[in-house]
Image (cartoon, rainbow, N blue to C red; front, side, top):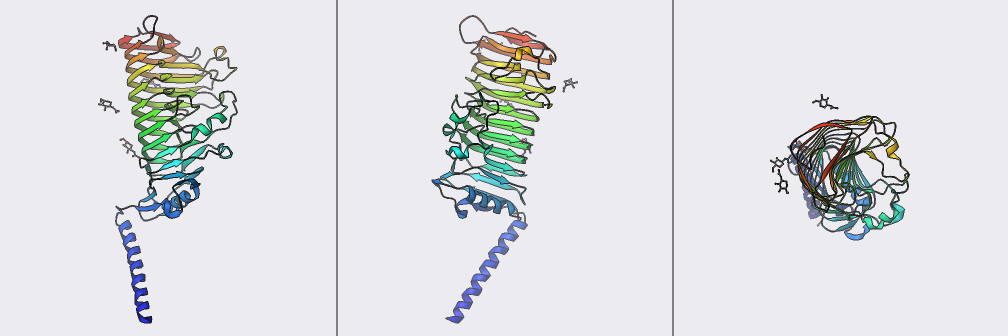
Length: 407
Ligand SMILES: *[C@@H]1O[C@H](CO)[C@@H](O)[C@H](O)[C@H]1NC(C)=O
Ligand SMILES: *[C@@H]1O[C@H](CO)[C@@H](O)[C@H](O)[C@H]1NC(C)=O
Ligand SMILES: *[C@@H]1O[C@H](CO)[C@@H](O)[C@H](O)[C@H]1NC(C)=O
Ligand SMILES: *[C@@H]1O[C@H](CO)[C@@H](O)[C@H](O)[C@H]1NC(C)=O
């Protein structure tokens, strides 16, 4: 028996050594097979009650430290409660985060006032995918949102934040009922998002679909976004953003800005293309909004084309007197955001307000080089055809113009 025991021991040790060597060799020789870090191995429980943020963090830490090739954090099917959690890099190699299950955020008001629910920071080469759901449980938190009346309101958490993330992809994910924005990108470069489905009720406050700021080289393709605020918002520092194949509605439409809210910081958005999108029943279609008064800022090189508007309230709108807060007297001030080189091309469908094209620029920084090309928008209400309205605009129109152009 004694001898048998040591033979067994040798065999077991041998196996362990062999398998470790195999993994290491596999990984070092190109590592086609990524190594999985399943959250349930780290104590995650898909019971819909237990807070799994520690288990998720442990799986992330192990995966992020993995030096021998690709690693995967894996969340199997099931419903997981997760409190706020940040997945921080840099990691030792490319890392993938696969969400098959449903993640549910907290409904405890004590945990509401933070800027994120799930955050990724300082990661290069991240992939987030899996077809799973992010359920922000927004209805529990929306009553605490007083931002429409309180300029110093505390933020509710964004469902998924990416801060300082680069060369990454986010695809095949669903977000429902975020407490604040669904997705937020800050200081990101070279990121592609696709096949994202977003939903929240039309009256849910500040639930932007995808909010982008201080980021460049971002592609968003094939997304369905139904929400209470902007479908996609591009704010200060957005550069080279390409959006295609997105359908929006309900919500406030695709927005550049608002820009210039702070009176001191120069805010810039340049190089945005929006193509092949559909807006259905939204408050706005494609919009550029700037505060008045504002800091001297820039919005330029923006192209909106092949866009179908279905029953949209303000299909094409530039608003340089934006000031949604109470007690604002924006008409008394001018915006100093210079808008230039903007093309609206091949935009058709229906407007639910009479003014289908509304370009209201700044008296002290008139819009420059605005082009309207092949516009065909009809008013679907009573009281005559659609009209256009322009003030302080320099530009030209080409091709079909319905409503008749005002440039
Ligand atoms: C994003 O998509 C563009 C265009 O398809 C591609 O050139 C780029 O490499 C992609 N970036 C990542 C990080 O996948
Ligand atoms: C837009 O749609 C047209 C026609 O389907 C297609 O040829 C083009 O590649 C699309 N553009 C983008 C950027 O998706
Ligand atoms: C607008 O376009 C013109 C002509 O292509 C170019 O000279 C100018 O620099 C552009 N303006 C901005 C702010 O990019
Ligand atoms: C404009 O749209 C209307 C209705 O959708 C359509 O009947 C008409 O042919 C279009 N005009 C042009 C020039 O495309």
